[in-house]
Length: 291
Image 1 (cartoon, rainbow, N blue to C red):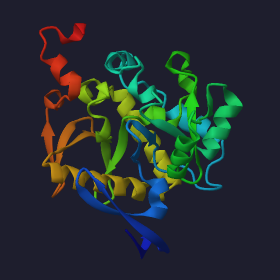
Image 2 (image 1 turned 180 degrees about the vertical axis):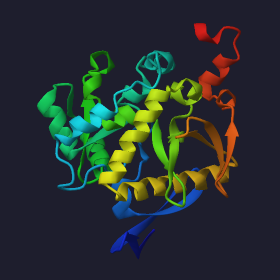
Image 3 (image 1 turned 60 degrees about the vertical axis):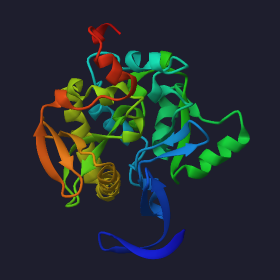
Image 4 (image 1 turned 120 degrees about the vertical axis):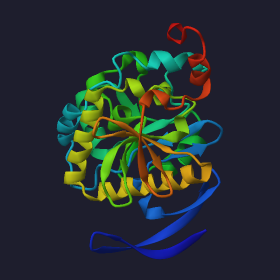
C-alpha cells in the first residue's frame, strides 16, 4: 500500500510515498524515498539478502578521498580474536556469515566504490549467475550505492574493508529524542552472527572507534542521525511486539537493556545477555571455549 505524505528534514519539506510492510508481524510505514537511508535486510528468495547501511554519502557531500579519513578512524577489530572462525563452522559453506554472499550482499556508496577500486583489486561489482536475481537485488539497492563482492574472506585486506564490513553487526542506536547513546545490533542475524552472542568480548577500542566515526559522520551529514533514529524506532516497535528488551553497548562503556515502550535504560551485567542459535547450545557445554 502506498500513500503520499509530507515529511521534514530540518526545515525542508519533502513529499514522499510511504510503503507499508510487515517485519516480524509489525506493520511499519516508511517513506519509500527513504529506503536508501534505512538499514534493512531485504530477503530475496530463500536466503539471499541485500545488506546496507544508511547513506553516508549524498551527492557532492563526500569525495572518494574522504573515505581514507573515515577508514583510518575505524580500523579496530571487534574482538582480539578472529570471530569468523567461530561462526563459519555453522555455515554450510564454511564461510563467516558476514562474508558469505549467499547470506548478504553488501553495498558500497558510489564515492566509496571509486576509492576502493582505485586503491585495491579486492572488490568488484556483484552480479548473480542468474540475471533475474541480479535485477531483483539491484532494484532493492538505494540510489548512490552499488552492490559489491570481495575476492573472499581468505583474501581480506583489512585496510580496505567497506564501512558495511567494519560496522557489522552493529548500528548506532538513537533515542526518540535524537541522542546517539551507543551501539545495538541487527537482530536479523542473531542466530548466525557469533558476535551477537558474545557482546562481552567487544573491545573498548572498537566501541570507541565506532562512536567516533559515527559522530564524524553525523557532524558532516546531520540527516544521518535522523535516518538511524528511524531505524532505532523500527527496532523499538519490533522488540515491543516480541516483548523483548533492546541490548545496548552504551557509549559510557557500560551495558544496558532498553525497555522499548518507554525507552527506560536498565544497567545490566553484559555477561548475562542472551545467546542465540547454536551459540546458546555451545555455551551450555562443559568446555564451550574448545568448540
